[in-house]
Length: 535
Image (cartoon, rainbow, N blue to C red):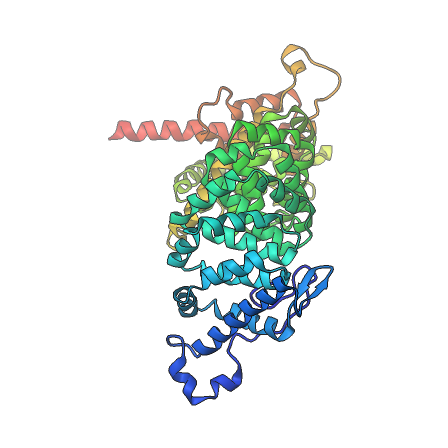
């Protein structure tokens, strides 16, 4: 059960009131008994804890405790009071007072002795609230016995208790001074990894999956050894089952799981485990990307991190699995996704302003060139006559383009004043992943037969070229070509490679766009040299 009283995992819903009983609040004597500046009563808190201790003693003596298939039921009135205490513990002043009253030791003893699942859940939940205070978190972590007990509780069969247990461990893991102690305890528990995989693989409780995902993410992010040791096919398959339950639409929980996949991809062991599951793993990755790119204009706000993780992992699969290359290279979905994301992203980076201005400068210089205009009009007439490229068929995702106009290529001007440094940093990370992925996709558009001799059958990737040639806007293609400039240590120039493919497979419109871009580069370089000479 969550701290706000919602039902979790089928447990009975309990109405909670974060305030002490009304009769105590109405008593004038209580005001002098308040905890700090709150209206919460010290006397009521003491009484509730005493009742809890007495109830647990009765459990162990076998008195007044009703055994059920879920464990032991305690008095409903006491459960209600404990739930009020649970809610009260969210208040920082109450949490500090509980710590001064040795509540950590009391709750630890109750957890160790109680056979009532709801009592255990509430006690762990109270500790989870108290652990939000850094000093109390250090005090909890200082009890080696308590840490080991909480870590072992990950094998508890009660879902609501697991929700609170994973939250408590994650909260303590997030404390820099306490995290290493919890990691050491987790490493020493040989069954912890198995229990985590079991939860991810079998749970249908979204709160539990969210908490468990955050815990795994924190563990792999903070400990490199653990990231390599946990990089197994078992974990990847368990994560995939959890993602099925969560769904493929954007959410904070899905972003957490995508980041876990990305963390796994940073080690050789992780890449091997991901590739073993490549056929299944690429499905949720593509479904998520397709959901983000469902509409014509892709909104990036809040999606940058998840997109970067998903694209990074998919690129790892693309670079490591020939089967994935064959599948993704035979359909235009991948390149369409990458270019749709690149279009709104490229102008958001301040450093791209000069590139857009350069290409626009070249565009303006050739707009009124007689030879150029005549050539493009001829191309337009020929395309319409042959039925290959018309206003209705060129780029259903954008406008028809037969020349590089400022508006079509440059898009919106980066609004540096409206973009924070943190946002720019996220955009750069996503842009870097896109650059590498686009480069890898274009360079991979080649078959063994291409270099040896012509074959009567077109290559698998011909549909990708057809998409770029017939249904992709010039603006998006130019964004892609601009992005190729910053990919370092490349043995193959992707722009030249794409131009060669266009010539080889008669992709005339795409060839002209690439040629225009290459001429624009030459124009700008020569213009820069002339400016230097004038100086």
